[in-house]
Length: 192
Image (cartoon, rainbow, N blue to C red; front, side, top):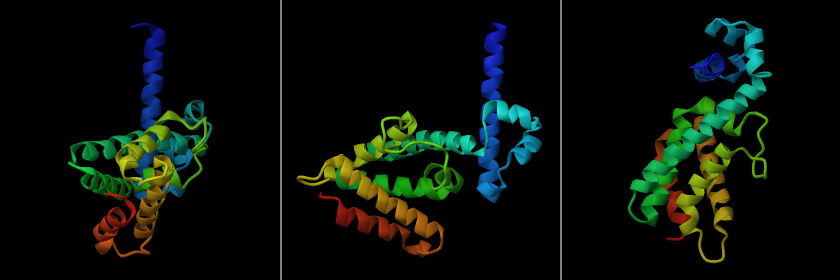
């Protein structure tokens, strides 16, 4: 292995460590607790080393969001692929989405609530974000209904899932009814 390859591998390893540590702190204490000082202390690197990888917290949030988008796409595709029939696929997708949001609150916030400097629904939207939307579209496209563009239907269904995830997590909706809400969404919105 060349010196350059070793340096690149070490740099990539530091970036993974920075992001994993940021996620860990955010999951434990929230994103307000993620500071370059705290990250530097936790991973035992200087703040200038952190800044050589990310210009600041916003870029870290963006990088976590991109990781989360890739993880979400995989988390959505697996149960949808295993489901039999359109209703089962839509129900599996809804459950997988809500489960992902509940299991990964800090990552979910990085993806959809915080400013990570990422473009949404534009030409320059990063590929992991486009792929996460594609995973939703793949699971919902066949149930949009006559005359309804599948992407538009997917946006509306996604907005409903996001609302359920966000309101439940905030305690605005009781957790005990989460499964029934998801099923109601499937039953009433999807044309099956």
